[in-house]
Length: 270
Ligand SMILES: Nc1ncnc2c1ncn2[C@@H]1O[C@H](COP(=O)(O)OP(=O)(O)OP(=O)(O)O)[C@@H](O)[C@H]1O
Ligand SMILES: [Mg+2]
Image (tube, rainbow, N blue to C red; front, side, top):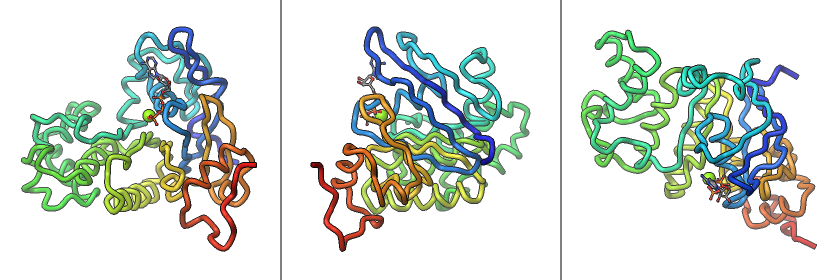
């Protein structure tokens, strides 16, 4: 097995006296997509924010986080800031809140670019902004880069965020419910885009969703969280074929997908 790109070892997260993640360990290999599923409040977002060190100061985090052989949990803030948005990047759920409504999208992508490459010339920035928009199949980049976020559809706004996340060619992308705010057709288009991009860039991805059906379309492996504890982890096909934990079976039963063998009765809790 290859050395993992990301390794999380005995992660614990608490807010005050309330523990929300207990002893969570997982790893992601280069080029691999790990799906993290669990119901609302199970600690998925807290986990992703802990990896990026974006939790508020009232959060207590312990455990080792290793990225590309480097310990992140002991890295000074400046080091984390250098990596955030360059070596690893984040795609959030709500494209409208993640984008600045009063800034043209071209300028926002340019800002993401300059954050880690301040010396790029104006021409080079423009060239790379257009390339980034083109890569996520935003129509007519030359004209649209002057538009504001509200002039795009929900799916297009998510494409803009994906373009911003990928602008520095990160090795790891953390996507927290990236398609939840979108309708089913657009959701499928964004999943296809993410699948294509991760293949063409050899990206590793932590893909977070409460929806096992969505996760199954993109993840190589799935980790199931319940009340902050990892209760099961398996290759996607394996998890669908033979879920070990009753909670996983319950999640599967409520999410029929293309992996569900419809000739068999749905798994039920006994
Ligand atoms: N800043 C915070 N202060 C106190 N508690 C918090 C904070 N952020 C999250 N929590 C708590 O931690 C738990 C896990 O929250 P988290 O946002 O990680 O859930 P989630 O699995 O992402 O849920 P959802 O599917 O609804 O996004 C919840 O009980 C939540 O109330
Ligand atoms: Mg969440």
